[in-house]
Length: 226
Image 1 (tube, helix red, strand yellow):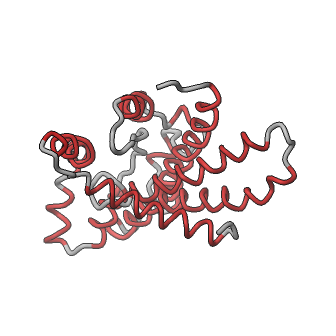
Image 2 (cartoon, one colour):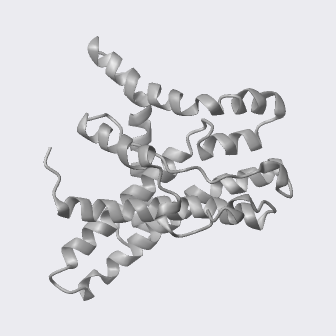
C-alpha cells in the first residue's frame, strides 16, 4: 500500500484536531462540573501532544490499515476524571462522557459549513482544502458513533452506566478494564475467525458503518450540502 505525503496531509490534520477537541471537551466539562483533575494536569488543552497516545493514536491504526482490517480504530490518552469530585457524580458522568461525541458532531457540522467557502479558496489549494474538510466530516462522524458504543470505557458505556439503574449499571461498569479487549475481539478477531470458515461475522463494524453513514447524511443535510 503506497501512502503519499498528500494522503497523510489530508488525513492526519483532521484526525489530530478531532481527537484533540474530543479529549479537551471531556476535561473542560469535568472542570465546569466540579472536577479539576484534568485541568490541573494540563489536559484541558488544544495542544495535540498532550492527548496523543503513541500506540493507540499512531501505531494501532497504522497496523490495522496495513493489515486491511475490516474496521479502523484507535484511541487517545484518556482524560483523567475523578467522578467522585463531580457535583452530581452519576448524572455529571453522563455529561462529561457526552462532551466528546457532541464536540465531534459540532466539528463535523463546522466542516460541512466550511464546504460552502470553497468557491473563494485559491485554485491551487481548493482540492487540498476540500479533502481535509471531507475527511474531517468523516473522521468526526466515525469518532462520534464509535465512542457511543455502550461498552466502558467508551463514552457510550459511561453514559449507559450513568443512566441505567444500579443493578444493571454495576455489572456494566465492571467491564471497563476489559473494554478494549472486548472491542478488539468484536471488531477484528471475530470477523477474522469467521472468514476462516466462510462466515461473515463483521456485524458490529457493519452496524457502525451504517450509523456513520446516517450521521454524515444528517450533517450534509443540516449544512445545506445534501
